[in-house]
Amino acid sequence: MYPSTRDFYFLATGIGSVPYLDIENTCRNILEHLPQIPFWPQFVMRSPLEDMTVQFIEGLPLVRFHEETKALAVSTGTDREKELITFYDHFLAQDTEYFAISKDFAPGLHKLLELLGKATQEGKYVKGQTIGPITFCASLKGPDQKAVLHDEELLEAMVNGLSIKALWQAKQLTQTGRVPILFLDEPYLSGFGSAFSPIDREQVIDILKRFITYLKERIELLIGIHCCGNTDWAMLLETGPDIINFDAWEYMEHFLLYEKAITHFLYHGGHIAWGIVPTSRFTGSETSEDLVAKLQQGIRQVMAWGIDQEILFRQSLLTPACGMGTMTPEAATKAMELLGRLSEILRN
Image (cartoon, rainbow, N blue to C red):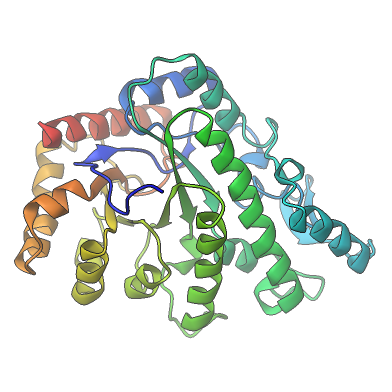
């Protein structure tokens, strides 16, 4: 098995979404700027099939995408029991190919795998991503217009389905000869704990723990959880990820309120992916000096807790604050170049 701690020393990677349309050139640029941990891009401007709530539905029971409304819904016109039986036949047989993500839904994944198959191996890692089960089941509505989070039978099926789809993806990434890193994207958990949240802390921990355990028992990989807003970080750390990824540009102070949980996480081999390059508020005037100064604020505070500098540096990665899909292509290119340059500065 891989050791619990990897030597990252501020290696950089991306989150997922990009604003570009050129699939091959985008993947080549990712390999150029982030060669140590390239990620496969989600082309959210290319097709509605690449929206994160739609991209992972192939093979899931009863889930339908309506092209005219660009919306997902649970089908009411099929035999629910029959479709669930078919689903579990494939799931229990570990038929990962049945749950493959096709080129129509993720051309960036297939193109990056192709290019890595031809490339000289420069890095040890490759990153993928999947929609987190909480976010997906909160977004998907049943016939009663309630979120699938409230339907115990469908919730279980969706968590299982997304788990085995993540396993298929991890197997594809492993074939590159690199260590796969898979982020669970959970934007729904931003602001967790409000009066409008239909799920409690114990449910979140249970679902994410089961998801992570399912993968860890079947393949060697590193699992990260990405949440781009503020949340109950102690809750997410308790679910057992290898990496926690947060928006360090806007939410540094909020994240660092969880001293006890973060300290425990680091001392038990966990890694922090600092989302230090702003995305939603990127102006283009940011410099590597600005980002280093911001990052140093967080690093100093964690070290003030008694964390050894060598441990913290070894267990730190860099990312954008969130996906770049809402940025202009020009801004996204600048942000990715800035991220790569920042990684070089810190590693040197």
